[in-house]
Amino acid sequence: MEYVLGAAYPNPFNPTITVPFGLPRTAHVKIDVFNVLGQRVTTLVDNVHQAGYHKVVWNGWSELGLPVGSGVYFVKMEALGFLKTRKIVMIK
Image 1 (tube, rainbow, N blue to C red):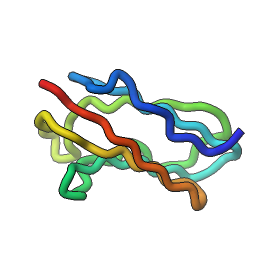
Image 2: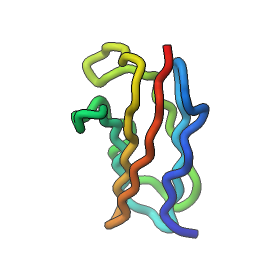
Image 3: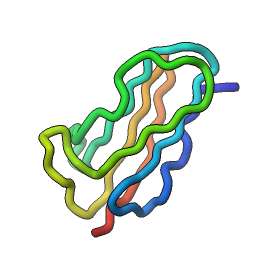
């Protein structure tokens, strides 16, 4: 097993999207969502997870408690030197 940031689904999404990820060993994981300007919209995960496959659901809201608009967003995962970014699309 290796570090994996799986393809989020459904993509495009409205109102929620599931982001799967996998870890070969216990690690601190951080998964953030960014807009096209590179601004962080929200943090989905920022804690230690056991080895294995996991998933997190984003409800399309910013960390300020506001719904995001239609558009392109990027999901970025960091864990023990692993870094991967995937594009997601919100359609309202």
